[in-house]
Image 1 (tube, rainbow, N blue to C red):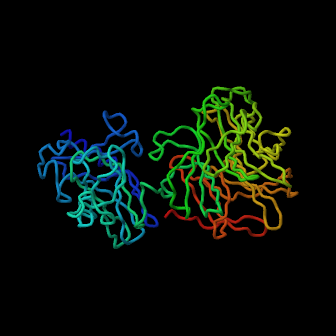
Image 2 (image 1 turned 90 degrees about the vertical axis):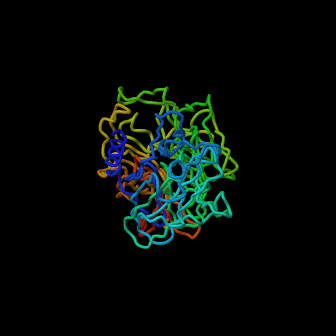
Image 3 (image 1 turned 60 degrees about the vertical axis):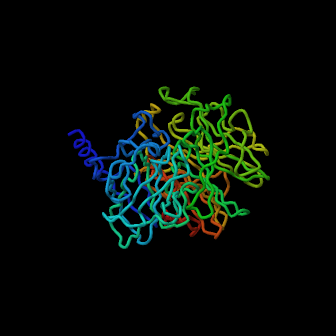
Length: 517
């Protein structure tokens, strides 16, 4: 009865989950998101979480995986019992079924992320629509012991450790299909699977853009190497299981296939911010032969005064880092932020006007209630400000901006200014993209300088993007196409979104979104 209740519970809860949708020849699915488990008389898949004992959930996707239990054949010396702790016949034991909605037909190569500790827990079968085709039998892992490892190899008489490109499923029509996995060896630990039409894709070396959780994505297109560099805060994930706070970079040749993250900066101890707080909105600029990171740092234990005395403030500012290379390492230019020390300031960006450097940044709404956009002149080496900041505009200057009411985390309400980014039109008009909240959520607004100069006056225009996405920037591909990137949604499963963008009549027009591949 206990087993029956377990299966009933899982079938009810998983049916309520959203069916994964394949798009452009790629889909990734968590192992625990199955819709049905069958043939469990002798073995079944159990969900392992952080609350379970003696497990590998900490480095698994969403800190959860499945294990085929009980595990009675741990070493080669343990007795092999066909049909109990081993099954070379696909679809015979412990079958998991997943619904996947396919929009593409063709040959999909199957990758599975598994944790193998020995030689007797490293086999699995895959099938489709209750058909257990030869190309889905005997998935095999030999490399990557005692660590989560992606593999897509088939065990053969020629190679017991598996041959690549032999594990695949052929999808002959679009719509919903059942993707199924069955036990080959008990004790198998199963984290997630990928189906891809890209024969050369290898998730051990490459990440799809759809796999990367990222806020405030920043792209630097390096013409000399024809490489795109995407900068991000260091977020703890399966790709950075032991993440510390800092800045990482991903590299790509095509904007869709990215290298795994590499640190360019780790927040040190005994600097002005806390190394225990995350870094926000890093961006990289080339200036006078060197590369500079502008990023937001915080010390949550150091409070500041605010217009609302009840507001929960924290020391926050933009600091500038320097390196000779796009991949670092970067080091701080100063022991203090380049924004005022008694301001909650964030999202600094570099602007050059007539050869002189300026930083444009936001004075945060938590401290001011009505957030502002500020400019400050920097010294030639960018190490410190030359004068006091000057206000360019307030959040409420834009009629589309809505007030955030009673934000519990900060014990105040207010109007947000975020993420300034500049674009100069062909005729010389100066536009600023920036973000706040409107009637449809986080959004990207446009402001225009009436004089074409940084000092303005700034005139607020209509929103460029209005539904649950923002902190935008613009770059040009190596083929000459302007691309706007932002993060969307603003909470939850956040990804970098790319849109074609064009200049028309001295304004920017958003084009089609580049779909995940």
